[in-house]
Every structure is written in C-alpha cells, then in structure tokens.
Length: 179
Image (cartoon, rainbow, N blue to C red):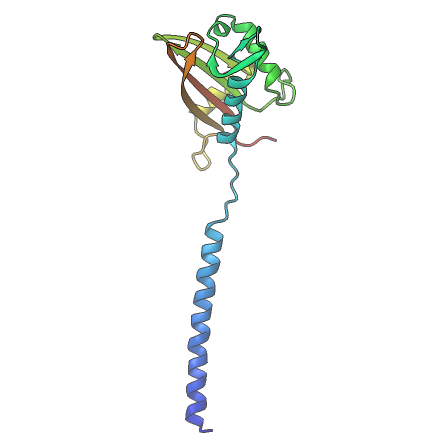
C-alpha cells in the first residue's frame, strides 16, 4: 500500500469521526429536550377535586334520596344556601391529611355558582384560602415566580329543574413547594 492511500484513509476516518460526534451530540440534545424535571400536578388535582364535588352524594351534586342515586354534573343549588353544612361536607369528602391541622398545606378552593347573575360561593380550606390568594398575587424576587400556583376552571352545568343552565367557577390554589 502506498503512503498516500494510507493518509487519505486517515483523513476519511477523521471526517467520519467528526460526523459521528456531531450526530451523537444531536441525538443527546434531542433526548434531553424531551426530559422534564418539573412536575406540575395542579391541573390534574383540580380536575379530580371538581369531579369529586360534582359526582359525590355529599358534594354539590343532586342526590335523590328516593332512588338513592347521585345525578352527576347536576347541581343542587340548595346546597349553596346551606353554606356552612356544605363546606363541612366538602371537608369530609376531599381528604388531604387532616383539613383542620394548621400544617395542612394542600389545596384551597373557591367554588362560585353563577345563576341568573346571582353569585353564591363555597370555600374549601378557608384557613389557607386568604393567605394563598394573597401570595398568588405577589411575586418573589427570585426568578419572578409566584410561590402559590392557581388554576381556574369554568363549567356550564344543569340545575335540578333541567331548564336552566348555570355556571360553576372553581379556583384552586396550592403552594408550589410543600415541605
């Protein structure tokens, strides 16, 4: 073999090696771009919270005692009139540790029923709701992120008489870091 052909093969190998490094780097960059280290479950927790209050017999859904049946996504507007009793029932059906502990740092929610331009509201975890709402409006100095996450959902549902559409607005607050 001639020296010229050996040196030409070496140049080819160097070009192949550089190409291999570039392709490997692109694959690694693509693989790491799909990896997320941030886990945000508030949207899912909000959906579970709303489904629980809309489908549980102790929630705000209409419960027929004669048939012992819950009508899912049909709102019993009378439960908004007995606010304290309904809020106590919400504490029982949505159990995040013990709701009355001062260390409870889970969800806090404001549930607003809008019917004929009349607003009625229920509060879940009233001990934390005011502080969470205040913190959700402020920004911290570090990275300009809010310490409290907030999700707002709006649903158009039926009332008991089926003739009337009502709007249910649920705003859920949760600390971003729970220690």
